[in-house]
Image 1 (cartoon, one colour):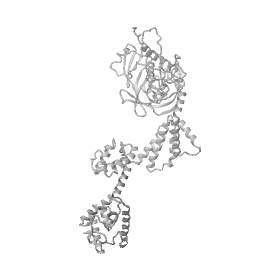
Image 2 (cartoon, helix red, strand yellow):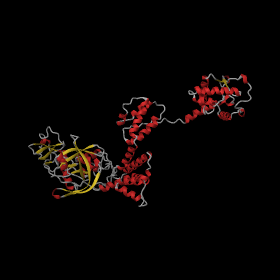
Image 3 (tube, helix red, strand yellow):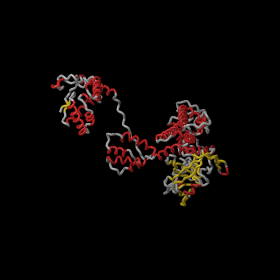
Image 4 (cartoon, one colour):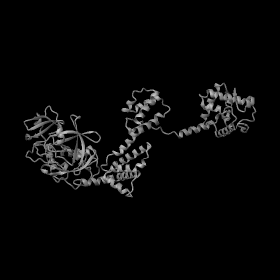
Length: 635
């Protein structure tokens, strides 16, 4: 059977029924073509609903394939549209010899069609065909459009890992859903493989027993959602981030913007969970103000126009962002001014607060590691880093603005670089030995005299060896750092130096405690304490928790003079020392009082003929007693 337009009524109904039945029976393979057949199409209606040449060709191909299954034929390249026929080569056109003269057709006389719907479609098709110029023009336009919209290839989206953190779940699952789960080109097995590759720790173990199959993908996703898509946990996680945020220590630009970002991110996360956080403004603002340092708090109060009004979170975030921008702009000037006031005893100006010794954010003269060096090593460090000998901060080729000089010899160098000349009659010893020995003694004497906050818990004499130990203390990040401690049975409390406390960065508690030394001598005032966890460097399982009082400095270098290793050679054989460098002068970071000492001391004891004692403790063997260094042999 051939299908054509302009058929008689009876033939048309027969053809229509046949086409409808064919679409119902075989249309599942060609859904677009089946839809056309059900609409009682004419030959020219075949293009209705298509917008490009490729769409029209594909639809025609599907219609022919579907009609072939019903043993129906379409005439090849026949149409009543002159615009279409003009582009068809003459030898490809099919002639209708039975209807050479067909004065009336659907497209020429649409008003002759008794069916309004088909008449309307005919008019739309005719207008569409008029707009299309020809095949070549359409293809050229398509090519030009593709070329103009040919964007550079973007890098692939990196999927994030998920290890079980409640705060990361929402971001992880939304990104995974967008990139992998909703990708129709991926099978269930492939999605399962992508999912397993992005999991770590506990989440990975949850689905480890599921094999890589299509059905197991949905099961794995369901297991993870049941475990981690916990709205209550997510809310608590967001709130804990704000409530337990550490109080600002300095109110710097970096600290201020970090607090701003934390509050903003947590509130946005709560909004996405469906909570109306605008009613929480008084609570959030109150919590945030508790995290302010004194200067930030004062600045915030000054920014409030109405003293009786309650600031909103929007106003709070706006203030923090504005303060960050101001501090970032003026940070260099304010840092220079602050450093000048604190260090005016020897430095008048600084160009950078980056330490050349440890690369941390403080000047070299405040560096804990630099102060541990002897004067000769400090001088060598200044030479290696091209530092000014007078202020330890400018490059040597710049003009130093400092008018200060050495406190000891009044020469043009920093006091920390002072090399004490040896005061004995032995002129033949090398200068290096003189510097390394006498300068340490001079430094020790200077520190004892000038240390306003020092605690005099020991007698400063070169013949006394006080028990020291190297211990580990856990910082705020959970990392164990090594410090040198003095074990003092004459102290009722544990003390820690300001430098060590800053390195640990643990939260402090404000107190006002007067410190008394020997003879009720006032040794200073403690203004803050810190809770610390001490561990043995030998047995890491042994830990002690205590509260340490923070003081500016604790002691002079111990021992005050180097002790010859020959004195303790016999005593220290076959034992593990708590402080392997007990005989070398060094700074004290911690004083362990009787509150801890009583828990670590053991009963084992060793003595030698030189007056030294080795006492066994949980920290290792400590050395104490008194001795006298022999006179160095003459060369």
